[in-house]
Length: 349
Ligand SMILES: [Fe+2]
Image (cartoon, protein in one colour):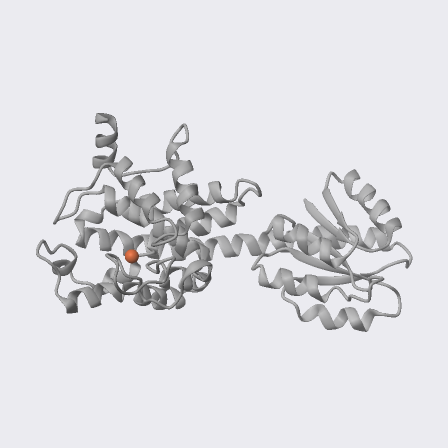
């Protein structure tokens, strides 16, 4: 069990961890809210329980920590520590979805009561994690099914979503090397990588596999797929958070919507305003598209695709994401997955 103890009282920060360690619980401590939030930023979803003192010496009430955890979309449970006489204040914060009761400090057997509450809070977290996992699994299966239908319609993109998903995780790992990624972030990248093109369900097989140049209307239809995909994702519980990621995966880092070979669409965001996951998908998607065969052309050599990614740094793509991709590409063993035809070209040299 992993616990974060937030209390300005040095005595509490020294005595409680000893009790936790006897139970073989891992404990981190923070003397104020700011330090606690820094720890939580770095270790999103890491802690099972946060013990939060609601009356710290700098007049901060602990609400900021509650707000921060709420926004992180994690199941970490929070037990409020409160001094005798301030119970109604603690009651106010029970509305927060992660609050798991409060413990009055200093009363008879308060530490035993706290230990029992921590165990119950941990069980609640596990139940919530299991429920969420089941719901997400249902969502993932639905999208994998849609993707497989999509890939059957457009045979040339077979395996594309899966490779994009794998390569999104490889990029994420390189980007976050200094801070280390958590399982949830990787799962999210996998999920969104798998269904980033789900909006193509509205584009007919004839358009997707057309050998002749596309008409203006057909191009328009294809360019609608990120927005259509986002509206599909919005309707699914727990997957709605990926909506923006899908919507902006064809934006350009420089924001150009005209005068370039591959203009941005929908053309609303640019630079770091584009969600990070969309910037990651853009690179993973482009590499796989360039190196895979299509009905109307053969894929290029992976090393040539790398050169194009480099030339588009800061133009079509986020330079940091391109660098991360290239590091993953040249790593031993290679972290980047690719189509059979691309692998064949690499083995030929
Ligand atoms: Fe796309």
